[in-house]
Each structure stands twice: as structure tokens, then as C-alpha cells.
Amino acid sequence: QVPVGDQPRDIEKQIRDMLLKFIMKPNSIILAVTAASTDLANSDGLKMARDCDPEGTRTIGVLTKVDLMYVLSFLRLAYLRLRSMIFS
Image (cartoon, rainbow, N blue to C red; front, side):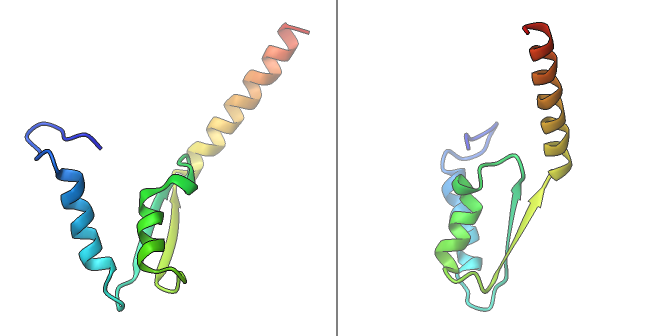
């Protein structure tokens, strides 16, 4: 969330304001897309959706990169098993 290149210093605020302009409309459907590796409790997109649609009637949550979570979990498990074999 840091401006890159020639982006304005307030790029985060500009994007947030633009999103809010659309998702605050009661006839809008909110597509809250979050990577599976992200802590959902700290997701900015989900927070904005919750603020604009507290009951969740207009919000669809989508988790992306679920396949990477499987790979990371498998690698972590393999590492822990290998470590236990070496140090046991």
C-alpha cells in the first residue's frame, strides 16, 4: 500500500473512495476477493464489504490461490517430518 513509480501519494485513499462510491449503493453486489494465504480477519476488502453490507446479503466472498495453500501446507508438513527425523 505504498505508491509505486509516478502514482500519487494518496493512491490508497483514491482507490478506497472509488470502491466505496460503488459498493455503498444498495443495488450493488460486492465481490470480496481475498487470497487464501491472507488472514481473513485482517482483509481490507472484507472489512469494507462488512461496513457497507453488515448483513452480508449483497456480498459474495471468493478465496483465491487455494492451490498454493495446499502446496505450502504440504511443504511445511514435509519439513517438520524431516526435521523430526534428523533431530530425534
